[in-house]
Length: 265
Image (tube, rainbow, N blue to C red; front, top):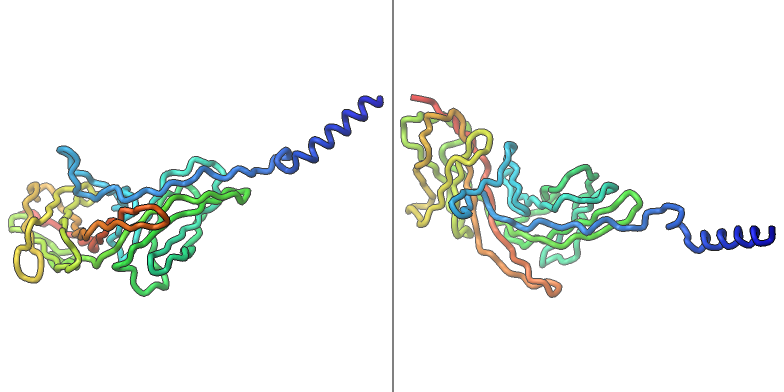
């Protein structure tokens, strides 16, 4: 009897020393999230293949990047492996304001991207933007990701054909947009209506005048009734030293998206 009592007391002591961990409280933080850097752009060439990062909705699965809708930046992170994630905090800073600010907190389902619309911010253009996320699990444990970055430049403004223009398939089709003094190169992208890339063109020199003008030279338009087009602009690639880490900062922008209806001859 005496030995049994001693054994019970020993067990009680062990459990009290173990604390809440033994009682099942989760103290393990989520696996560290990984941000996706800028992987490239639709129209890039890999070997003999022209890459299209877009899916049916137009979303581009290429890491941090500009978006057509406005002067916004889309960030992306690798899919999270933990099954008890509660929410994600999105944080950003720039070199002028190095104290990170939380720009949003989003409930987690399977989301792996977020678009920063720069709410209550005057202009996001011509600044080096740095992003990271903090991932919280249901128990309140958290992990912080690495940092990724991007620089927005002014968007190309599409001039012609205007949005929802009807074009006769038997006539020459010419795309025009304004010149952006910060852009080093442009890329004209023409998609089918499901965002499958139909044709892309990168002018190698300025055609003269104040605007760019490029004549379509892709597949025969007689097979299509609706096209979507935009122009991407690319600036200098910058390198920034921050906290003993050198960041490669891509710069660019994407024009709005125009829809073009093809009338068969």
